[in-house]
Image (cartoon, rainbow, N blue to C red):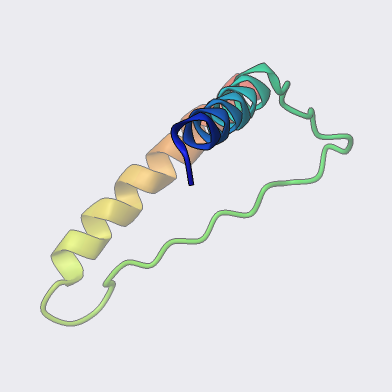
Length: 73
């Protein structure tokens, strides 16, 4: 493979990378079409030796969910 071929391949790879970045940045988020509830699951230790940590995590998550629901988001 000569030097010219390596330069051409490098330019093509750079163009593909730049296009990929541009496509990812310019892509607009799709708004949900329905107002179905969003289900949230949590894996937390609620029993056993680590239950105190799980109960604190569950309380924080419940608080956050209630605040978001009050705002109507």
